[in-house]
Amino acid sequence: MVTLLRTVLLAAAALLFVSLPAAAQQAGSDAGPAAQKVIEQVEQQVDSTFVLTTDQLVAIAGGALVGAIAADLVLHGGAGALLGAVAGGLIGNWLYVPSAPVPDGS
Image: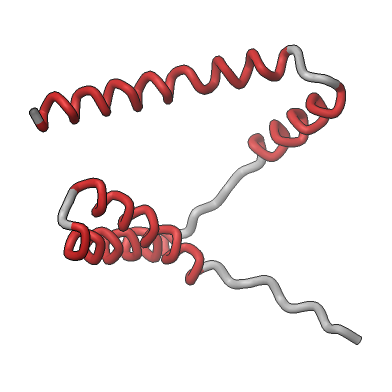
């Protein structure tokens, strides 16, 4: 039963992953001028390079590991561990990335 559920979830995730770019492309083809401008800005941002340092990768992986273990201890299940890993990775990245300086009020 569990194997069947995993297979169905994997197939649904693969279908979603494959169909999203096609749906996004179709939505962008008949968009209005304002939406077209936003699409162009997003495409420019996607073309820019993104650097993930080794330290940042370690912070994300460490947070994901701690989050997965903590959530599995509390929620006792694979879905809980997955959610904990995602939350832990986000928190690890958030703690690693330096915050923007606070603007001076004067």
